Image 1 (cartoon, rainbow, N blue to C red):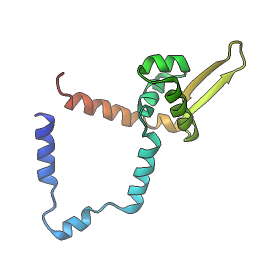
Image 2 (image 1 turned 180 degrees about the horizontal axis):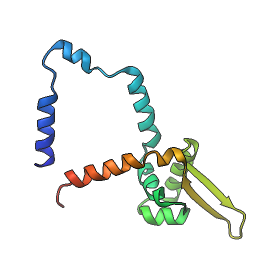
Image 3 (image 1 turned 180 degrees about the vertical axis):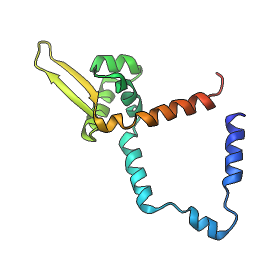
Image 4 (image 1 turned 30 degrees about the vertical axis):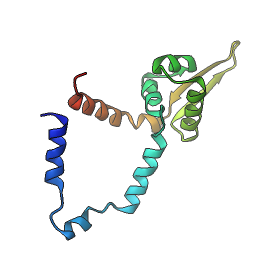
Length: 130
């Protein structure tokens, strides 16, 4: 079964059949707000890639930039700062010459590991051949 067939089947089966069912489908505003907060926290052009690269442990800035590829120094810096402000990344500067800075995930970010595993499984299941 390909992705589109699967999605068509899900859409067809999931469609409400009455006005009462439509009202029951309306998302709980509090749950929606919580979901939106989570999505906004990890949204950003490179945030998911950064978090994924840090799953195996601390990495220096240059290592992150090489691992991701295509990200500018400015963008990586900005995204890391936002992730740090949101409590997902910890920045550690070592008092060495030359200065060494490492980035690692916080416990909150490691909470995303099951989500990343689910996303990988989903991608492998529905990936279209190149």
